[in-house]
Length: 222
Image (cartoon, one colour):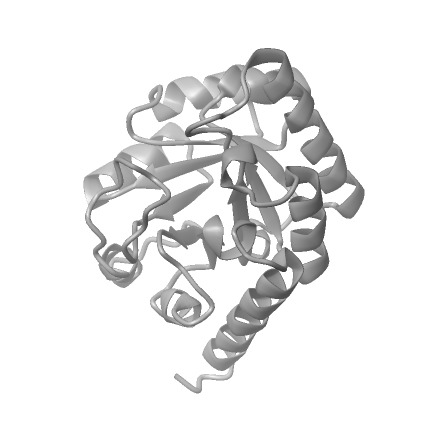
């Protein structure tokens, strides 16, 4: 496994329902702009199923392989195992963390957490990183919980949790730096890259903001 803390810097999540352009082109552009991690999340109205979903997953996975970007699958453990994905990301409503860990072996396992209790359970179950959010209001996920800002990230860091964390939910170029400064190792976005005219430029701007924030933290400027 590569350095997960660095890999999570600019974490792009996407499936065909999220795109204004062809998903393959969106991913290629996002990688050219500087994303560091990719999650295939095929959900929502018009989401592909079965063979079509598998075919798109393989296409996107191949692009990531060539560019050495970690490729993980959202929720669909069977698909992830079938195509040999680098890992999976699960939510609290999915199978227990330990069960998923047993299924995927030493692949990357990300878990969405909303409380310290969920964080403790995820660590015990074998999580490699947390997805925490929604940090800001979001319309991508219909059943999203209320936005809380980076409160939980700050709380976990203050209490000494060192597990890699990525913030998610309503993150844009304008507010991304604040998430990293709160203690996250990176930010994950969907529409900030997938719904814009130039995914490449959006990814590039986001990467620049995150790199600048990381440099400030490393330099003790904050």
